[in-house]
Image (tube, rainbow, N blue to C red):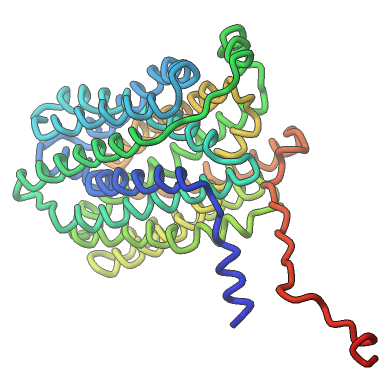
Length: 434
């Protein structure tokens, strides 16, 4: 019992209070995203009559907009700070989702996903830079693990709320979802208004002006990691974003079950992310990312089996299992990839490093829906073995990149154990006998 209590205490990341405040705002924001995210394609296709191909193209346009705006966002982070850039992104995204109920034609979806993409371009490098500056270097993996917990807690709860609200026979139910999402962006922005961000010293800021993106592009290891992340996003997150419409339209799964499938994914992350982060301390980062891809390949094959052999509730249970396997892989990425980027980047260029990292997510967001959306409409079962094959390739590439990384960044830092001071001095038995 004592060892269990000690283990639980050891999971406490001991992060600064301001980091917890930022994470609390992130939970609220993620709840809104969870309400909308699993049902966006369902809304476009089943409510507005937009084809899967056009819906996938709309998502791809959002990724393209984020990719295009990413370079500017990185420069903004290094000049005005991560917090200010993050607030700007939140306000832009709030505008986009406020207008989502007006979608009637494919081009409406294209335009609003583009606006959302611009906000996303500011959101991720702003938030990542802010967290990395608020947290000591040896604790960054814990901060980003906690970020994954907070976001998935919000998304999981939001997915259930969205499943209870969304009804394809009532377009107004989706309007309520979008308004709720827009409100959560504003709440997060209000929380950030109370946060003060530390900035690098002036000499480094001057050096940043001289280096810019040219200095970032000379870092081949970072570019290789960024290229791999394009594959992670395209065949991982974006392909699994197609699971809700696949489940509803191919396997006959109800909207309510779609919400619970998403909840299973996010709750598992909430429950095990901090223990996984603790277990990764002192271990190889790229090996963790390779294992992540193996787990994602397994999850894709589970979806293939569920869609091929089952329907309705039984299919939903298999899909739920698949999303939990996928979630286990996600817990390996949170404490690994973003802290690795932070360790590779000098502080005065961290905004640009995170911006290019965010752009790799945007590139994956283009590639995944652009291929997966039409493929889902043409042959839904073909999506999943293709994703599994690419994940296996990515796992191999992770291990190959590991040999090129500097030794200092290959492993997740392991904080030094805090010495325990006894409450009473040790007993001197020789003296006691005297």
